[in-house]
Length: 239
Image 1 (cartoon, rainbow, N blue to C red):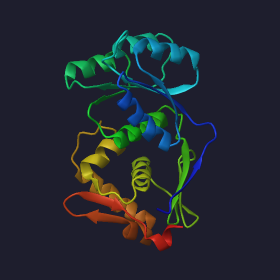
Image 2 (image 1 turned 90 degrees about the horizontal axis):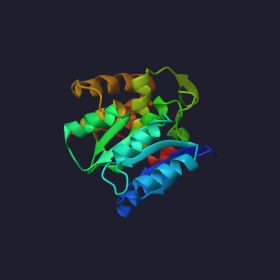
Image 3 (image 1 turned 90 degrees about the vertical axis):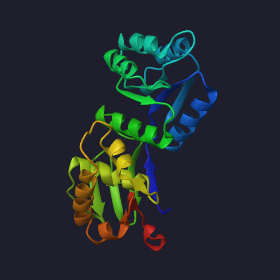
Image 4 (image 1 turned 45 degrees about the horizontal axis):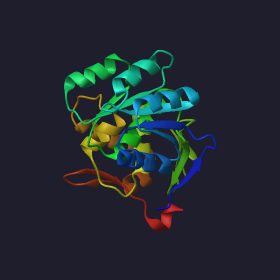
């Protein structure tokens, strides 16, 4: 779709732990598509062994209900020696489980079923917050270029100043170009589920972002009435 990416050679390594092979494959496929190196473990004991064998794991996606050692035990064991980011997965929707996960050191908590794309967005957000950046450093679409590592945006080669949330919003739009994005989706991904305001904050940020991007902002960031927004670049302008 006219998007170009520059991938670092030192792809970040993520450990996916789940006793369901189909779930591991689903998550692995989406992460690999985004340029990550993925290790797999089918139970808690295997996860702990792999973690200690691989000192460069950047993040762990950890299912709660597993044989041998459950996710709580694995998280507790890892937290004895490491502050590596941990995303807990569970089929339960119990608030007590979520609170327990945070209490033992989990960074995020996602209930099944979930959107793999949203999971990848959460992975990206956590890695940015932890200072490890993204495996996809540069995204360029239709004359708009985002350098994630340097936190620089240019339009036809000219740098523009964006706030932190405007930068993340534009990145999310470019990474999901061509897709109609509901306001709730945008809040969940860009604000990382920790924002309790209403969706009107999206409209405010989009308006500012359009203005700063100039004519491309008005052309590429389109309102999808009754849903939200879509970033779409005409094919003749994409390259």
